[in-house]
Image (cartoon, rainbow, N blue to C red; front, side, top):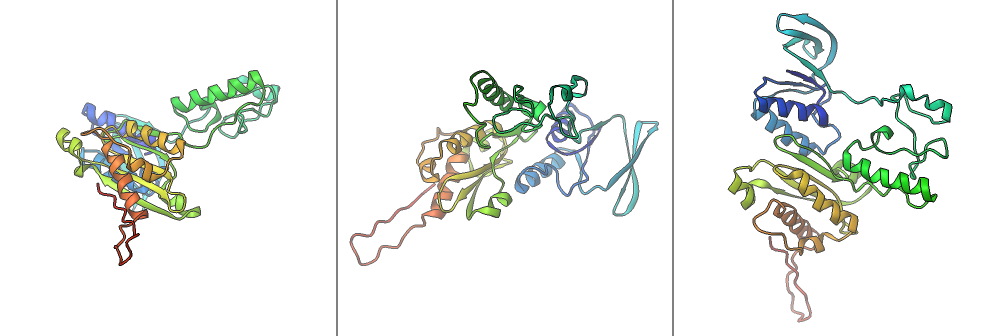
Length: 306
């Protein structure tokens, strides 16, 4: 199988069919897979996919054409070294989605769409026709089930009761059931550093009892923390139960608790959630380094020990 496009859908397809026993090539024109994810996530997932037998091609050049071949289908492309080709039984193109709205005649109702057919909505999920609201994949925002449910609640409430609630901020975890899983919530490190002063703490699964017990030591939990407010701006995870672990981080972010509060929260042992707890401890330690007692008797020494 040849999978073209290494976003969330392409990577998940490659992982699943590799597990089924297919010989998979993952073709991505961009410099890395999972371009919307934190680069650390992309690097670890890419290495894991390669280790599992998937041929990962990044910065792969431009596609020229497809043509039949004895195997099934041939991809002709041009990379830095010139023309090249890949033969496969089947090629799957996963380079994005187009909204299935062309036959709805939305323009007749005054509803505008973008070039890919997605409905344009405001923060209340109202379309350009004041009496029509939209939620879910049709808006082209975060195209996952749990986000569609949240948007559905907001849109329906505002449609029935008038403007009551706006779509909350982007504390919405996303992830993919690849092997290993990956998940994230909030800002990437690069995005956060554009506007904030941040510290970063990472806890690797290979240091944690539960992943060692299960033999699933590939992965990490990474926290991006606001250096001034001490709140969590982003959490990025690769590894077993990553998608579930991101839910815990999302709750902490939505509640606005400090990383010190998260560090003092007891996490059941041994669990994968310990990764988040220990990353919080490491972050709190960076923000509150141990002080050296001086001659004064009123000095308080604060220590954070994993």
